[in-house]
Length: 467
Image (cartoon, rainbow, N blue to C red):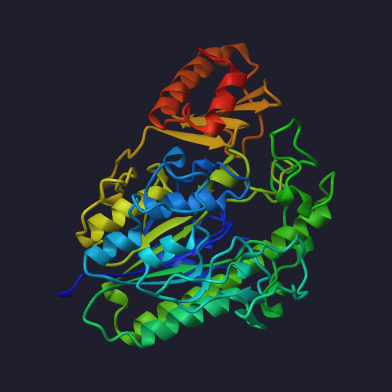
């Protein structure tokens, strides 16, 4: 291959780390993702640092596309400022044509800086899956703001009336985006390599999908997660937000199983569409010349710990899938090296020979793909608004909670013995030294991440009143 490898990046919305059959979940059907796992290297411990907005996906996407840490992005990530180089911009400078389709959520100007072309562009946060207000690419960057409205919570196929001329009615979002990607691949005859960013709206609610995929899952056969609860035992700062209102209180087993069945069906449907895109690369004769990246923007509780959203620091919400496959990437390999989504940016730069912009704060994962033991990070830092902070190190996780200006709870989990984070060890005297050690690490990372200088951090650290 004379030219640089193409890149196709599949990015899903609300897909948890444990939702791929080949990685240990026998309850879900993901044949195409299973093939991708065999073709490439999977990071089984990829994370987001949680978020600074109830819409956790917004800062997550800003971090991914800018390569910057949580408190180094502007606001909650609603816009990516011009001094933060995006993946698309860096690759364009390295000779790539860049194409974006699907959910962006980080500002019109940043989208047009990142992509030289696009189709079926959705600039909002969430939408009825069958009635997406999707734009054609506009070189001027002018997109109708009336099309950015977010619907109220619902779980039906009911059409949402939106004052917009760009509604793509009657076609599911996953099909809409993948068809746009396939059309672009089929018509790609340039000598230049391309970067294609396919950003799904699925499996985010409203969780609706073609009946064929819904019929693959019987809610009665779904097993409740081991850490299912009727409600979270204490305040988290996010118990009354939109995501938590999608199911009744206390949480009912039958209703929770229905949600999980629909969640799985959404993922199986997007897996099916992903497979069609990969097939188009093969039919075009460029699959072996293409790096494929698969990742999700955040996890989701769906009944675990009595929660339904992602506004927390538990594993089910901060761990995400991350797979790299293609030229130069080891096949059928899994690594437990700890990573963040914003490490993808410098990784792609190294894989393609592009310069890593000075604004990027992520760490390349390329060494972790090939070396038997490679610790990218020894510890991980997590934060949710002004309510929660967490640190993860040596298979232990410490979570601290603040609410209404008071420190209300400490949790300590041994993730090796208790991966579902069921039993907190925080009140056991024999673990006091471990808590002190992790609190010291939390303070260290707080300073490294400039959390104390953030609006959210000032409130949290004032309430917790640590020296």
